[in-house]
Amino acid sequence: MKKTSLLFILLLLLTQFGSIEPRPVAAQAVSDLRFGAVESFWAPVEAAELGVGWERILFYWNEIQPAGPNDWNTLHVLEEWLVEARAHNRTILGLLKNTPQWATDGPPASGVPRGLYLPVDDPSNLWANYVRRTVAYYAPRGVHNWIIWNEPDIAPNVYGHEFSGTSADYLQLLKVAYIVIKQTDPTATVHLGGMTYWHDPGFLRRFLTMVVADPEAAANNYYFDVISLHIYFRPETIPNIVGNAYAVQQQLGISPLKSVWINETNARPSMDPEWPVTVQQFHLDLEQQAWYIPQAFAKGFYAGAGRISLYKLVDINMAPGDESWGLIRPYDFSRRPAFYAYKATVKHLAGFTYPIQREMSPNHYVYSFNRPQGVTRIAWARTTTPVTVDVLASAAVATVYNVLGEPIGQVTAQNGRYQINLQGTRCHRGECLMGGPPVFIVEGGASLNLPPATPGPPPGAAPVSTPVDGSVGAEPGVPAVSDSPVVTPTAAIDLTPTPTVLPTETATPRPTRTPTATLPPPTPEITPSLPPVTAEPEPTAVALVVPTLPPENAAATERLATTPTSWLSLGLWLLGLAISLALGLFIIVRRRAG
Image 1 (cartoon, rainbow, N blue to C red):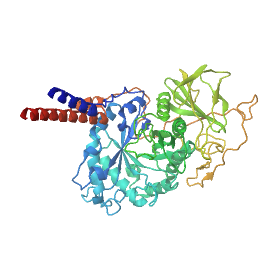
Image 2 (cartoon, rainbow, N blue to C red; image 1 turned 90 degrees about the vertical axis):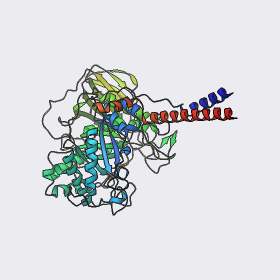
Image 3 (cartoon, rainbow, N blue to C red; image 1 turned 30 degrees about the vertical axis):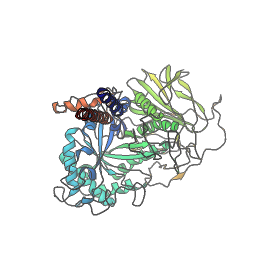
Image 4 (cartoon, one colour; image 1 turned 180 degrees about the horizontal axis):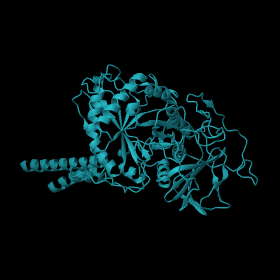
């Protein structure tokens, strides 16, 4: 009876606490540092499988130093996250923000830090002290990219507002951070806080005008190395926004031009049957989120974005009904179609080189990328009507994959072109936000017939081609796929244009194909031959490089075999085992005493 009781308790507790299996870390997929996913550390298995090249981690000042300047909470950013990113060759961007209450006279989190205008070596400049200590601690741990605050272009009393100071205060915040970071870690890269553009389209121009007016700015590299953008939902707007970020620098005389990164982009699904959300606008289904990813990456890289990152890999601590952006669902880590679309995009574009070629017409796009393995083209329809298009060929035969990376079949070139059928897009509640399902057209061993590389500005910085509407960095004509406001700069690049409301698609049916085409064959357009200006060299090799960690990190390397969830499971299992043994001994002792 005594043995039975003890065995029963052991089995009960082991079942309760030991049922969660550790999740093994997947082998690293083909990777390219230009493809990112925000907060990939929450899902390291999936991040490795996808080949995520960079991620962003939040460094909240009010969490790291919650009660005073002597606080130092390194558990806010776990060491395991940094070790794992390093082992998988993933670049980390640290986002510095959120003023603690003790360090500001303004609102908590968004208030201007006290002592901000004092010299950077003054002990009363609290922001300088925090930045210095943070960079000094995390630089040896592999963090060399720092974003200075988040979305400073969102005004007070507007949802998403994060910085309560003026533009002059943000410039001072940036100046102090830049000087301190470069003093502490000369190899570091400093990024402007990610800007949303649509909250204030003129913010970047006004802010950079203030920067260049600073008498010490030019000697200090204008206090930043990279412009960060947050662009959502409408792929058609990406070339305009990226192009304007280069153009405003050019107009203001910033030289050399700073690289432009898209730190956040995505199209959140509101119609996920397993995670329903009620929204006022941007009604999208799961398939459309998947369609968005290749479209956004193709347009972003063509426009000159140095790197692009999805927001985000997985949402954590979500309440039912919250907007979930992740490629992975928050409650069970199940994968949305967008997960496989991202995986296919990285697989078929990793290692691409410039220039990028674009074919276009009012009813379709084709973006062509040169890679060491051959040519990858991404094509999609721009209207709700299916269309058959003739796509320029660089080989005799190509394999076509759907947006999820599944092979559809092979196509054979006829007269130097492939015939590709593209499905039309769909609209929900009058919102036509993007094109239809993209396809990947992969030509092994082929290369684009492009002119040799010649010196020139980064893509999007100056007129390099003549689209139908004569714009720079903009897509041609009037996209029938979108009825949302977009910016269409003129050839001189008007940086504060009046948004034009595009008409919705007309009900007039379009033929899928006619023997005599009503439109001339699309003319290939080519980006400038130089890759975007970047603060650090962009990789061309795609093979994983796993650095050798110093001896003091050997134990941490072994911990990569499990995720934080696995450690929790192991802890609970050990706790259950200890409790079961204690209960068993207690029962035995009591019965013997009786």
